[in-house]
Length: 148
Image 1 (cartoon, one colour):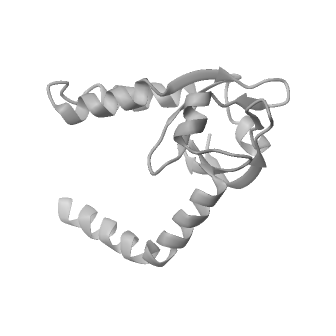
Image 2 (cartoon, rainbow, N blue to C red):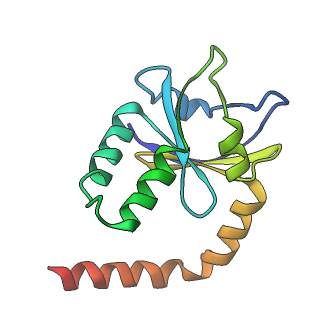
Image 3 (cartoon, helix red, strand yellow):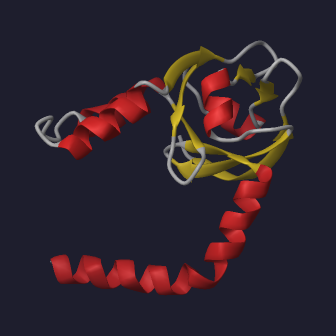
């Protein structure tokens, strides 16, 4: 399964939003894991995808304060939810507040996961980072080559 693309949808008055059909059909069950993400967004994983993510995090030393902060922030802000018959998800209030979601939101596919953004926050992110795209790619390539 591969989540790709960008889709804009509206949240209804009950905090429900339709999952883009290209994303919804890639979930092996109707259950999804939604959690706090980075840069002001939320993340959606399959159950197996979130389990893999958690397995990496729990390997970090719990003796380190940074690990405890990361663990608490993610797990305290994670919910298992079900897609309804219309492939909608109910966004929990605490996550809606964290991501400053209002009526218009953006879903972006990132391969193994999906991000949900406030539409204005995502537009700002894109505007702020478009000019950095090639520089970032070069830096990452250099770091990977130097690590070998």
